[in-house]
Length: 353
Image (cartoon, rainbow, N blue to C red; front, top):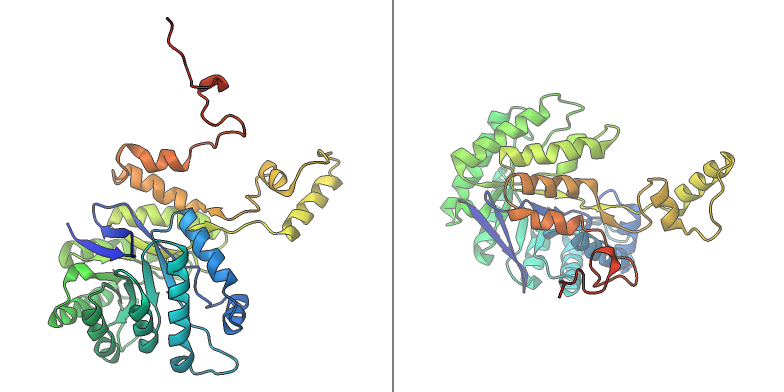
């Protein structure tokens, strides 16, 4: 069975056909996050720290690190991104012990991350574009790391799945020329939005099967791409991920965290409840309130996508005896009842003399 080994200083993650699905947390990425981008340019890493810890707590197996900020003070990413990548990698690996995925379109930033990253990170990414192959594959060989291979080339992204397969095959073959084995290639077959292309799901499921059976490689994707532009994106994602896993996909770059409910939404809901004449206890705090009305939580927690993945791991026997499923769904003990058995008796059931 194909296995891609990714390591931190103390922990190993295995991406493989017979392994639990590998969740690569995507939150440490300033793309589309203006607040985070501004913080990073100002040297404020507080959100990075929070996102790192929250994603691991929610079940991320690997953390993706992207430092793609276009500074207002200097718009040249070749100058600004390498030192920022180095700083974020050092910071994150000092906070959490999961392996990292070094993610950038700037080769200098990729190497900066590789230079300071402990263990064996995943590199994200190489494409079938000739210039990119010549820039990235030597780095993969030099640092002996696995790499994400994205199925587009100099002609762009094809809507034809056969073309995307051919690009993936080309990358695997070119990697072999550098002495890079197929088990160190994790192919991203490129998930199209199902709202724009009704066959997008069917295409990626068929592609994943071919990549597994014909090339023997592991696979990944940007999971939320499938639901782009649609209402109730979590509903689409929750169905897509187990189906992709069933087709043979072994990892995904995704957000494992359900974002907390903010004070604005809580205030709006409280006003709605009050207008309906519902009287609540004066001592009810915000967390109890949002729980009561099924709004989620005021704290970061594992998202519904993680629930779907854990269930799929159990159903595919990649969670033997359901240990992880049971652990994730165990009801926390109430204060003062820790260590008590059924009925709240200390020590549990006693034997009769």
